Length: 332
Length: 258
Image (cartoon, rainbow over all chains, first blue to last red; front, side, top):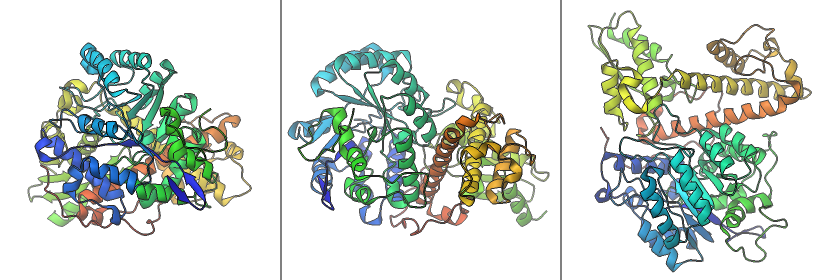
């Protein structure tokens, strides 16, 4: 919980990771390039006081994660959104066993989401059923730009993806997080394209589609879709840290999201360990749309409370302690 | 021609090569790492991008446009364009050397050529330029309403950089640039119905925010990855330099990935 000026904020960090990018886990040069790219994001968008040494960034372990999120970071609950990246890392990038074990020790603080890849077809589908039971899945993170053999990715409206989504619906895995942002799979099928989210969201109205990085750099396409599809949500991973280096740009993103979506479909996330949550939470609570940006309404305390935690809590059925909600329900 | 004027001529040619997504010349963005000319008219240009994982289609587009622009100069003989530190560097550099084209370079995954993608981004660039010019007009004229924009023609716009940028984007798309042409139009130059004006302006704003934001991101990442690139970047047109500056890079440069 974070308190400021007599207001209490329940914080859900909706996108965190426990990764291992150490050289011994790198399968090839791309494993190094990938973590170096993350580290450049970290260096480019963090305040100087929040910079990590490169070696610590490669692997930080569960103990540090618990401290950064829950001791220092005001977070009440965090959700793992792992990327497997099996083509780049021997034992995967996101550490399934280590993260899951941590959620077992702290079930009140952590939720484990897993991933799947429709290109494993029936075998992967059987696996998904077993994983759903073992991990008690309420959500998954899909990295549609994942490399597999000659393939540089898949789409949400591919026939096999639809079969996986059907199984998610059947098993009660209702929260589908999709990485749509700076990406690695592109060729001529534009990997930033969010049109496949539109099709899947229409086809599966009972599932929630949380578009991570809110479609950046295709914000307008994302907004257009989210306006029409009530089950499409915006995840603020990677958008959040602009609050420090480019506050006016951050104001425009939040302003557009509040205009095109609504305050109930925007979720805070630090994208830990790309960034730590402490400074992001502090700055967001202090944040206001600049007065000269008359095209946007000022952001209210109630809106901040929803974005920082109540919206994700509603999607995941996380109990919000009495007094930490807002007057009206967070999600209708 | 001696080497210095040739290098200037090469850089001027590279000024015409745009990052389609950011709507800026690769020279202003700092993507040109080096230009080397030989007395015999040989030229080697090295390009660098903000991450190893920048879209290969855009990377290929910029590198091949650079090669075309340099080849078109009267004095160049052997033109070599190399893309450094990209996950597809080897593939792209081989494809460029062989003039293999996009499909010839990427094979099975490249189903179509890049012209459709290029057109998509030209249209976005126009939409964003239109929003900048019209929002500027609204701010300068408090009595003007968004609905009034229906009647605004190009001749009503002030002679600002935003207006000139809009005219260039319209010309690139083949849209009219006469003073009597309507200013707020769709990608085919058609006016929107009056009732749709606020919505269309709003959508254009989201396009502009998206492109501007991506430009901030890519420029910052390039400077983080290649600190020396800061000296090569020109300020983004129409944007003030941010207060407080950017995070100084204090971490030792990492080993370059080749």
